[in-house]
Image (cartoon, rainbow, N blue to C red; front, side):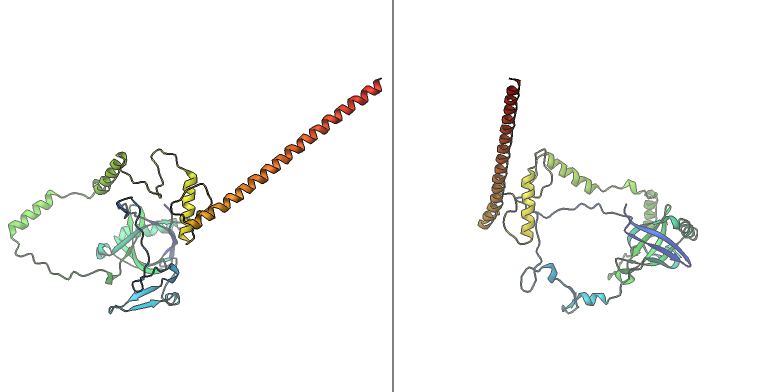
Length: 329
């Protein structure tokens, strides 16, 4: 796990330096919205509802909609005036009985790990929470916004659980009418509860939906029911054309910037290229040809130079032999 936040728990004059880790992760099955015909992903554009034009990220601002449907535009300067904090303190406000905290208020869970220098006060706080059977109500700044949370003990670890604000919990706007309940019916209900009574073991439960989806997808892959798209990152034993993959990546990046034309590989076809793109392909090819010609000339010159040197060396040897013969005679 990777720590997502560092700070300190403070209660009274005691400070416990800690690291914060996400305690949960979602395993929900996610699907892509695709074109049923060819498996291409569906893209969404940022379009203004008034003029129908696509809006660039730089032109997008924050808007607060009033109850009357009016829109109030908030600038970056406006947002800077709002209360925010970057405090690295988890401040204990009070210790409350566990039963007073409605589980409906709980939002996200995090593990607290003590730094080496905070091991002893961490153990002290953990034991105090266990002995008192209480939770510590705290305030903490996460993502530059202050929220309320509680500290409780799970096994040997202190867990921080952020909570909803009281006005975020909805009150049911309906009444429940059960009618008259007879004593015999209540007795039977009690018997049913006793029959199904037991201890909670989370390992007894399994996400059968996710497992069923995985089995279904695997069966379709083995049956060859796959749509090959340009964005596919894997192949079924086929050799990947690296050059073509690089070409598509560069072209996609250029299109994202509003540029046209094939990028650097003139020998790779792209059905989306226009006439201008063809012209763009020719330039790198000419440079390549020129480079090859230059290389060829250089190689020829070097070969000629080597031959000349060899001839001179042979001539020198012949002259030396003749001179030696004259002296001998």
